[in-house]
Length: 147
Image (cartoon, rainbow, N blue to C red; front, top):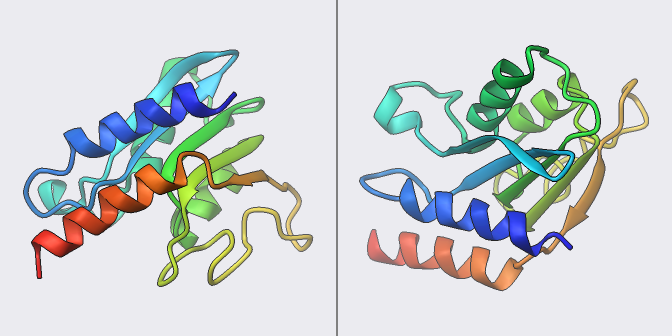
């Protein structure tokens, strides 16, 4: 079910992996249609907020003309950080589907459980492990090449 959109997120991650950017890709889907996409670009943009998820959310919000994205699913190759998890909650994303856990900075499972916290007024449904092997391998290849 999630494979089609996760494959697009992986394609974006590979596309954006040039230079020093970590290979992370994300797409926002509403009604079976991709309405936003992005890849990590904080180095290229000199912008610490230019994570794949944030860029995909910005594009989706601009496309539908609303900062809230009800009914949307965000697919991401890597578990979102705390900043991105907060943005998912603020955007009222219905579901997050991610591939690999981020054991150092993960904001939805690994370090924190922000996106579906009972303390907040909106909880994102979390689906983890979609195409996890491919997502992990992509990240491992990137970091291995830099060592």
